[in-house]
Image 1 (cartoon, rainbow, N blue to C red):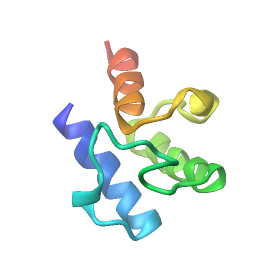
Image 2: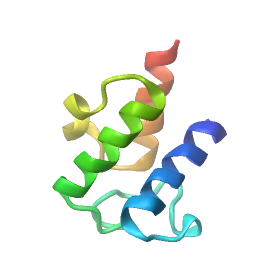
Image 3: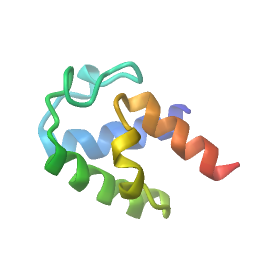
Length: 77
């Protein structure tokens, strides 16, 4: 999980300008991080390249950073 979180934080900080310290697994994407739908799609597109898997089709299921981590963990198993 730590590796996923590190890579997710890296992409989010590059795309949004947020500080890495502002991002935690419990962070709500829209409410806590103020990431809108279009920005989330850009982030997920980048994460798809990093992890070589489909994430955008599941974007409606992502409310927190942990939701993205869970999807990655399920897909890798």
